[in-house]
Amino acid sequence: QVQLVESGGGVVQPGGSLRLSCAASGFTFRNYGMHWARQAPGKGLEWVAVISYDGSNKFYADSVEGRFTISRDNSKNTLYLQMNSLRPEDTAVYYCAKGTDFSLDSWGQGTLVTVSS
Amino acid sequence: QSALTQPASVSGSPGQSITISCTGTSSDVGSYNLVSWYQQYPGKVPKLMIYEVSKGPSGVSNRFSGSKSGNTASLTISGLQAEDEADYYCCSYAAGSTYVFGTGTKVTVL
Image (cartoon, rainbow over all chains, first blue to last red; front, side):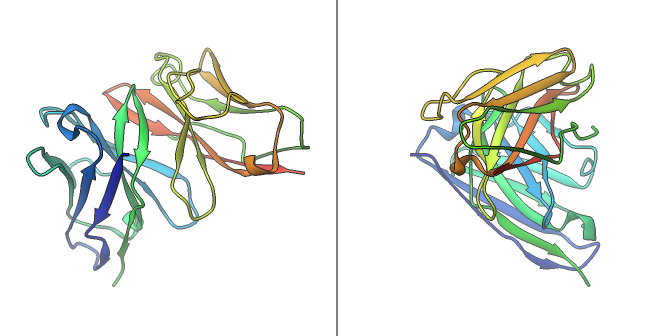
């Protein structure tokens, strides 16, 4: 079965950087686009970014464009999210999700990122 | 990329049907038949319930159905059950190859 395991979350100061990872198993990773989404404490879901199956196309939410970079290593079945210039409003649980038919059909358990001084 | 608009809460009695609306614009819901719906219990991971407006993934109850008219998509839960009490989010593919989620709706079973 599909398994997605995020890691790399933690506490970081405003302006700092963090890299999240998502280890995938149970499916042919290189065949699927992958997403990052987030959920601030007590708030709704927010889509963050998507990357195509081969990494050639990447798209971002306006709120993170220019600060976050999505990437993948198909040889390691791993998805990444490099987050720079972090702001307090970036505080959230970050989920990676497998993309199928323009939906997010399987989700990881999430990793918490807290941006605070 | 403004969030799609959903009612904050919807409630119904067991056995009833309820409908959750999801209103977007001509740049997202109105232009693409690519709306999906997610169920999320408190503290849990979202689960895909509907994709491409009205298609149900394998294993999801057929009590959940989706539709769309113009800039508004809808999720209907028929034969409401206590286990349906959760938060529900719509999501649409949008211009620029991006995605946008709805504001979320809390469903309460009376």
